[in-house]
Image (cartoon, rainbow, N blue to C red; front, side, top):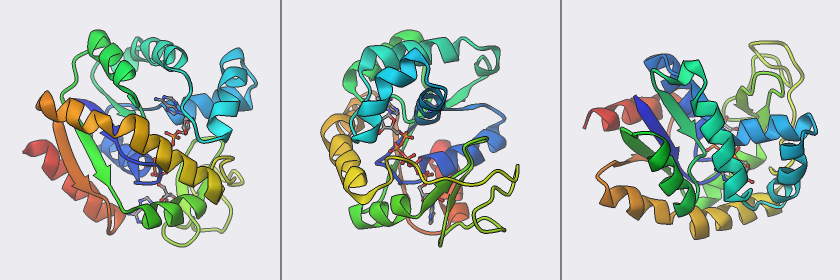
Length: 209
Ligand code: AP5
């Protein structure tokens, strides 16, 4: 299964990608997580990406395409993968089609006000990237990752003004991919409201259709 997850910031792509990754036994490849680790380690890529990420803009296509190309060559991606957050522009989608075949694109849909609530309440584990929400998906012990015990952090781009900018960026630069993939017969839409488990079942059903 070679899967692309599409959807605005906070729609639940990362949360569902984790579950789908376990279900299908294939890796989740999150461009956001890879970029954030590069920023944290202050790599050359991280230095170039940081200002775009902090202001809710997309990192330039050439940097992200090279990064994904490299990641897809790793051995665990041979049996399939879930791309979470890539592609995000038509140029990235064109580049991806040259790299590999894609079986389906799952697009998660949610209203903007709900997106704001999900992003501003998010907490993440900087070590294993597990995602929580202070109210809607809390860890067992407040402020601590259930899996590895690391202190949770707030993402630098989860401030409300930056979240609004990220939603705007999605509408302008990424939403055109809906038509792109619909035209190629790969597009499946999943309504992303409700319990995490319900949405997961919807996603699995959409993949059977
Ligand atoms: P990225 O990390 O990909 O961020 P995003 O696309 O904005 O998506 P999010 O991670 O914010 O949300 P999500 O949909 O994964 O939701 P989540 O599951 O966390 O990208 C960050 C930045 O990196 C970009 O702005 C850009 O600068 C750069 N970048 C990345 N990829 C790029 C690319 N391809 N090209 C160029 N630049 C790129 O859930 C959100 C919250 O809701 C969590 O708290 C979660 O616990 C909660 N939640 C989830 N599901 C539910 C539910 N059903 N009910 C209640 N709460 C829920």
